Length: 389
Image 1 (cartoon, rainbow, N blue to C red):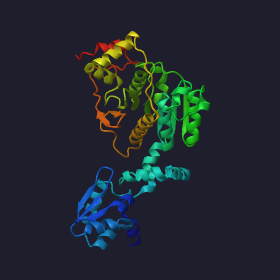
Image 2: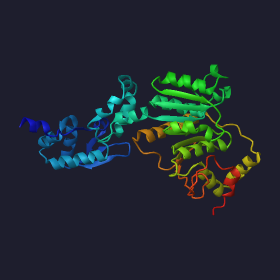
Image 3: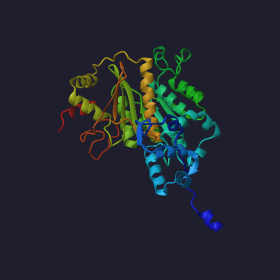
Image 4: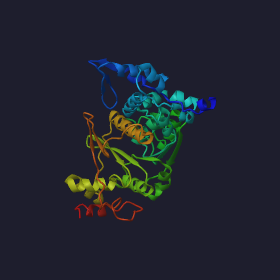
C-alpha cells in the first residue's frame, strides 16, 4: 500500500495570479477580471466561481478544491482549463526554468519576472521567458539609434550582443543617441558601446566590430552568429539596409529594420521567405508611389542630396523601445508580435498603424525563383521590375 501511495501522481497546485486576484471584482452576479487582452467576464449567479477563485491561493490541489467546494473532479478540471485558456493562472511548476538563472539575475530581473508573470501558461513560467532572453544573441548593424536599442536589450537581459559600426561619435549625435556623452566625441562608436553596455549589464557578453557594411558577404559571419538581427543603418543609401537584408535571407535569420521617414518612424519585421523582404518593400512602394520611384531614380543617378536627419530624442526613444519590445516578444515568446510586418508610428500624435509588406513572387531577392543572390541586385534591376509581370 505504501508503494502504491508513492507511485500515485500528485496533482499540481494552481494559483490565480496575484495581479488578477487584486483586480477582480464581483458585481451583478458576474466576476470581472481585467487582463492585458481585455476584460474577462464570468457569469456567477450563485457565487460558486468566486469561491473557487478565492481558493486558488497556492495552497490547494485539485482534490482539495473538489472537497472544499463539494463539486466533482470534472468540474474542477473544467474550471482550471478555462482559467488556463485565459492565462489567469500561474505556471504550476515554475522552478523548472528557474535554475537557468543565478541568484544575482533573479534579483536583477525581478521586475522583468513580475511582468512576465502576466503571460505565464501551464507549461511556460516567468523564468522560461527570462531564460530565453539570456540564451539569445542579437546582432545590431549600425550603432547610431542602434546603440539605444542595444541599451534596451542589455537592460532586459539579452545574453549576447554583437554591434557593428565604423563611425566615430560626433557632437551632432548627442541630441538623441543617449549612450554617448560629450567626452566621447571623436571616439569610435564601437568602443564606447562595448564599454557602456558592459557597464550597464556585466552579465551580457558585448562584442563590437569596427567595420563598414559594404556588402552582404562582409557581414555573413556576424549574421550567422545571431538569433535576431537589427538593421539600424541607412548608408550607403538604399544599399546598406539591402546588404543586411540579403545576408539575413542567405542565413535565414529574422530581421528587424527601424528608421525614420518624413515625420514618421517605422519598424519592418522580416521573417525570411515568410514575409516581404526589403526589396519587396521597395518594389511595392515604387509600384504604388511616384515619389518613391523618383527617389530611387535619384539614387541611381547620383542626384539625391541627403537631407538633414530629423531624429529627435523623444521620438528615437519611442521607436527604439518599441523595437526592443518586439525583439523581446520574438525571443521570449511571451505575447504576440505586432499583427502585421510593417508598423508605422506617426510622430506628431504617436498613432500606430500596421501594414503587410507582401512577399512578391518576382522579388529578385526572396521571390519564387530557386536561386538566392549573394548580394542585393543592382537598383536598376529592381527598378526594371516596377511594372509587375
